[in-house]
Image 1 (tube, rainbow, N blue to C red):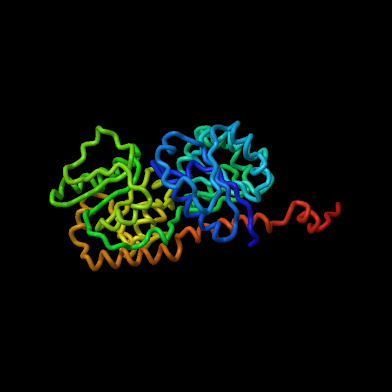
Image 2: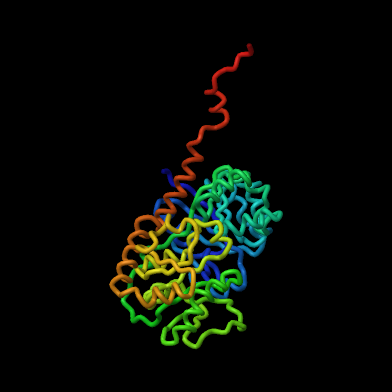
Length: 373
């Protein structure tokens, strides 16, 4: 495929604080750059990211910050107009206005990258999300969805997406790999606080911790309210930077994956943390959701728990040998199917599908002539 110019407008690539978007963009865009594409990433300059920039200048993508929509339009209108592909991501501040401006000015392929698909669709059903209006969906050439499975058909049939294609999260296999560190915790969790996800975290980690007084547990991530009563054997870490993820996962016997309810209901929505831990060879205990077996084989590559009792049983009965074998099989699956290189290839395939599609003029010219009877 020929080298293309990409402009990506996303929530953040410079800061992973409090969001899962940054690591997703980093892995995808680094792999796109490795395929020879030129990339400009445009990010709204927000105070809470400015205070926590762990990658202010990605080496594989020119990254620019803008103050507001007028600043974006003044400085980058020509880049948007001249790009081969323009991608707008979910949760971009003033995103619906940004989308309207991009759709009006981009002359190349226009794509929406929904890193929050079930959340977006629920909002569209109620009239629109702050970052996307329902009538904007059919105007994109390509709708890239973090959620695979039946949701893709729903995007096309219900919301009029021209081409809905799965582009799930991925992992950078060079950054996420096994490392030898002392094991500090029996079970850990990494993720920003979410009210909808908190009951699952309480059921699958906090309750087991209370019942297993001798066990060691950890929850890492920002924005957890002071009102949460943490058991004494649960260590709290406010933030783990991406550079420290590998050692953090490796220090756990098992790591926990908890899915937001809307994601679990839609299914086929793997978390980036799931792939990260698996790439480090750390076995994952996950809640159950439709489509999980499309990404990992339950019992062989991942362990599934619905209750605190399930978690306690897995912690008590899984031998170190079984644990290591599950982790190794999960890592092999990730390396075979879920790296940034795989997602970049899928994106190139989606773009190629558009560029190689016949134009309306070509279709009309090749159609048989209709003669009235």
